[in-house]
Image (cartoon, rainbow, N blue to C red; front, top):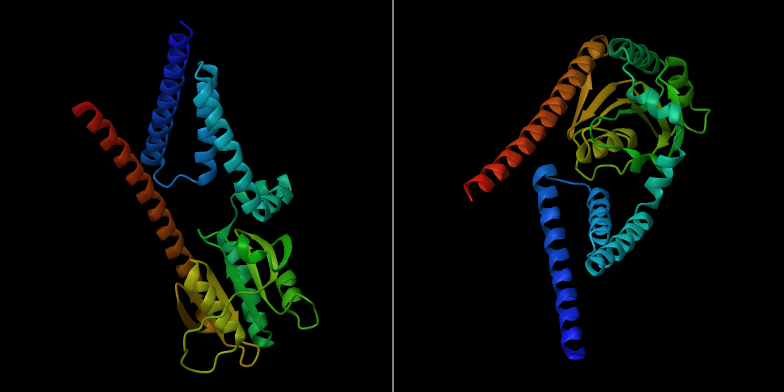
Length: 279
């Protein structure tokens, strides 16, 4: 009788483990199909939720295993990404809210145009990067956090040779100067013509992100824009129109990419539903 009872308990435990594994695999597959490229943190939180559900439903063994598995991976995830998490937690709530509010883009572009004209005429070297869909937080780690609205006076002060922040790039997110004195890895590509460290840095960041970077040469006052691995010299008189057109084209591309990703997710979900109906 005791042997039969132990065998029955072992069978129940094995069935619990099998059911738990099947539920977790099915849940993970559905997540991947629906969200396509689901971030790791969402997958870990989902497995934690499944573990809690299994434990609550009486499947204590697979639930406990899944909970331990999720907690261990979440701990590893935290320590691997501790720098990014600390940076996110250190941002004031007002700053996050202000970045999400709408702003007058034409007014921002006019400020940049006035600043570029002034820097060019005084031959003050400058490197101004505009963040697009590629997040630049990792590059900001080696710089100085500013978190101030864009203004001509502040930009000219930052790039003034007498300040400690002048030798490096400024990163602009929306209508905010988020960081200054940021250093990029310069391109290793051979460039035609004479280019300084700023131009090579601008070229380098344009090769690995979709950002738009404006460069002002301190030797000639020449203005250039680096974007998508291309460094183009821009006449000062037509800077505003060309810069505005480039930013508009880039925004349209991002919008189209986001719309395309949403369409792909919907198609994947519909295909999954249709396959289920056919089966």
